[in-house]
Length: 194
Image 1 (cartoon, one colour):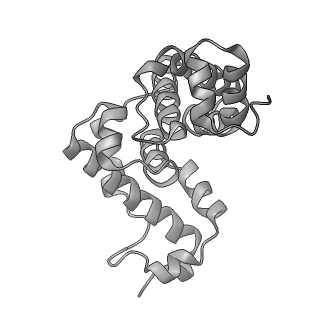
Image 2 (cartoon, one colour; image 1 turned 135 degrees about the vertical axis):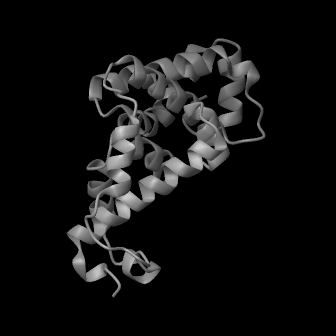
């Protein structure tokens, strides 16, 4: 019987019993998505591959802790995100944002944005433009916006993943959104409301 067309819960039961074909099936179903999750965080293909592999190994080791309250893919994604962030910190590419950086960002006067962008204007932008603007932001802002907008984590989950307080999370997301809004408006002056 082929595992390819089996429900994931059936395949996971076999994984818990140590069935390597079942583990390979889970890997084949989720590896591309998990690689992309890792790559968006670590920004390095080799490191993303390592994070994804570590995530799968950890998931198979902890499979007994998986409760079907959430989808398996969401549970696995959280593991991969945590591995990616941990590896990103270790890779020495991570530089904590200093108070000087924050002050610069707060006082930078790229454009006068009183009302920000309307939702109608924002919807006119292509996703690639927004992602491109996000990539130009400070690393801390990129990471938190990726977790929030692209990966879909809520504030509480982001606090847990990044090990920061709720207040710090809200402040960082607010500043990241404002910085992104400024970049988008600079690149697309027609979107600025007068």
